[in-house]
Image (cartoon, rainbow, N blue to C red):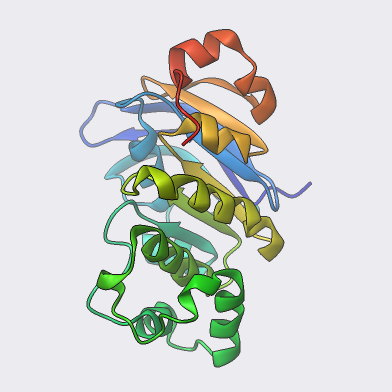
Length: 236
């Protein structure tokens, strides 16, 4: 099976001290993969290394077999690595339609209609400024902006972090349906239990290293892992 994304011995940091160490990770086509771990485990640093935003890295990042380790963030995105950051993921002063259009200058009405079919809540909000949307609608718009370029993989950084508890499950439901678009998902998420429940596989980071990995169901059923890294998160 051709892997969409793979990192080999990925390490790096901001000074001469590594924050992430020897991370080997992969994502297969149309898979949902969750990266979990406690605060300070290195999850955000790993994403920065993956996206070319970390000042110093070692190891390699491959996108469908192509080594993208030396490429800029912009070039990685052009090749099909989409990214939805935790904050500032939409232009709040622009309308929903303008946000979709600015995501790709060549976007067609057909592409916009495809996104509206996936995220129907946005269909009646096209002329509304993004800053006035609900948290859930704004996150859906962020997903649509990233997906409209038909990426090979979408990377989500804490997609439920800023949401009211009542909206969290609806966003996980949306993420679970992204397979229908034939796009792979790599997600960093603090609500690890809920994220793993919609995932195929997972990786658990601790002190910048992968300490556990495997099938999502197996990770959820592992008592030691649950106690150490997932806690007793409520299903909200």
